[in-house]
Image 1 (spheres, helix red, strand yellow):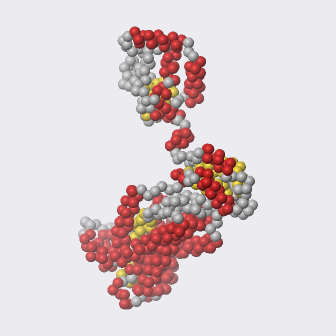
Image 2: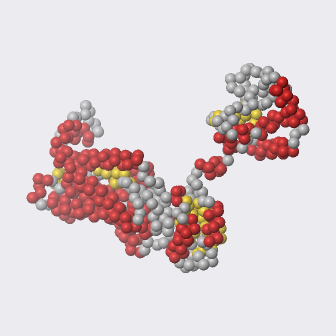
Image 3: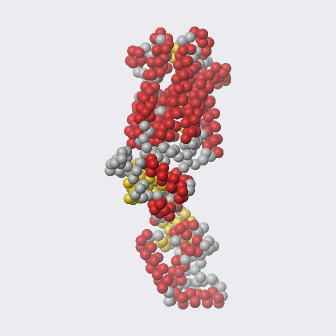
Length: 553
């Protein structure tokens, strides 16, 4: 009844109550006996559901003639001897009231007989069954008939002996089959997937996951497994919308602007003094300088901008090249502009369910490996050109303290350029050094093992599982908060991850199979290099290593 009442146009929703209008009550009107009014109350929901225009008690039509009086007499006679159905309905209504107190009579305050609004029947929103409401508004659940057929035709003593069922999914919209595996997990899973397609077509996705709250490992080795069932429209990502394409284009244009700004900033030694003072001196006063003075420097800033953009595009190409052979669809990249590094990288979503953890690892690591390879090539070639006097016309002057921002890159620069060049106030370097430095730093940030960053994806569902992600993530957030990783960039990067990238990826179809030893070893080496890249040099260590000119301790 509550569903019919809620769908009626006569229901007015206020802050805390659903209110159903009824006609004003008169003092014992003739022809409206208690039985007739009770019958009217019992039929409110049905009449509202049928979309009737107005609810009336057929008692007094104010001069309706003999027909109205006759109808009133007939209704009074019928009410005097109520039928068994009416008595049963009255008892059912009384029991409903006693259980939930859904309906109550409310009278209007003010002058008797004069009311700003008609008397109402009130329905309390507090008494709505929120579980049933979520079932109606939430994702579509698995069909019980299909669950029964799956239990009868898929599971058995030769594949998977079912012991119990549990809710599965973010909102419990699926079914988790818990039991005992009767063979090799990969072979059983492939067989169950094939039989499920033959039975239900493309209606569902079957997941193999670790059994929750398992008492021990499987006797055959590895964790105990269970099988989760979800509808395809619930478990698979949605398509890319037009607004997402528009937002991606706008972010890319902003990223191009930030990369050009980075290239202009690299010319700080030759920029107009009033512009440098305005942007670097916090105590600067007066009107802002004319920004048109920067236009002559745009052309010279393009090499750095092109280098940073090329690294990020190559990073994304690596993801797509790794995903294509495995039939995994990726969404469009959303580039994140940043005026210090040119860009913070890009957010690339999976647009299809990944088949297994190896696929997750390979696709996640392909982007950082491609970006790091191109970045390091640019960085190394730039250092070699910086040490060659032939390229003196292309070099830019940067403060030597810049090289103290990274332990690994500072040591490589010190070994290539020498102590004399690195121990001066400024260092002459090729623009490729700046592009490579920014690319390596951005790649290192994206390899941190948190959320749905590349490092988080590779660590969580690729190598060590969700339990390891929690420990690594907590440690990474702590180091970022203390400024140990990334130096002055740690706070903006941490906020970016918390806002945009903190949620881990959804499970793969096969979320149990191991990725192998060499993939774990590669990830450990990568994390070690990431830490060396993001740890800045403090003054004492920089002075001992001869990286940058240290004026005070």
